[in-house]
Length: 56
Image 1 (tube, rainbow, N blue to C red):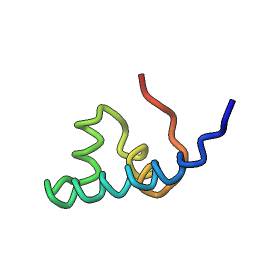
Image 2: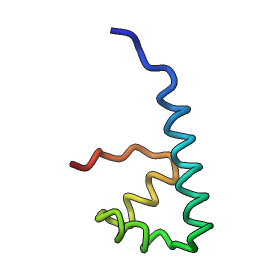
Image 3: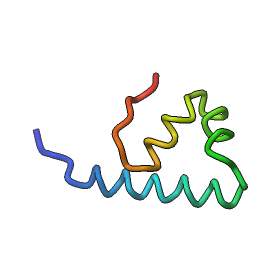
């Protein structure tokens, strides 16, 4: 099975998109967490580049 070497780059791009959207929509981390139905600490970890578990 081939390794997906673009995963970290894809994640970085996604985080950049999230940050951009937060600025454009003037969303706080707490508001984003509420909208995403997750804990604010999860948003902080994601934006900080730390690992987070997938939600189903």
